[in-house]
Image 1 (cartoon, rainbow, N blue to C red):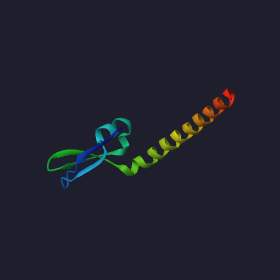
Image 2 (cartoon, rainbow, N blue to C red; image 1 turned 45 degrees about the vertical axis):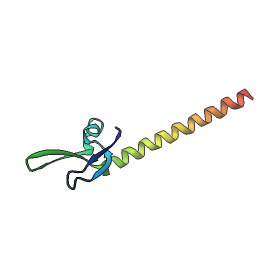
Image 3 (cartoon, rainbow, N blue to C red; image 1 turned 45 degrees about the horizontal axis):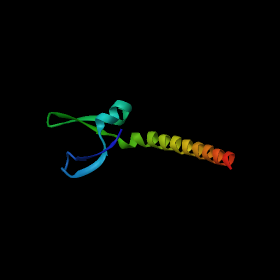
Image 4 (tube, rainbow, N blue to C red; image 1 turned 135 degrees about the vertical axis):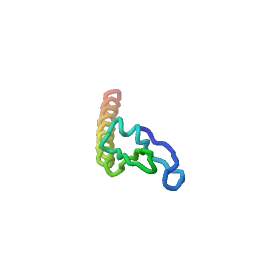
Length: 79
């Protein structure tokens, strides 16, 4: 899921965030669907993404710690 710029439906102001279609592929429970004037829209439920993003951040931090330890180990072995 990549960040994107878009215009908001309610006030036509530019904003940024995630596209609901992309989010829905990975996390369908984090997308809400609603109708307005006979048109169906999808929107990201950002509150549902918070836990997912925090978990992914924790995984990335742990991987970074492991890689740093590996680099330090390799550097010590080469000195």
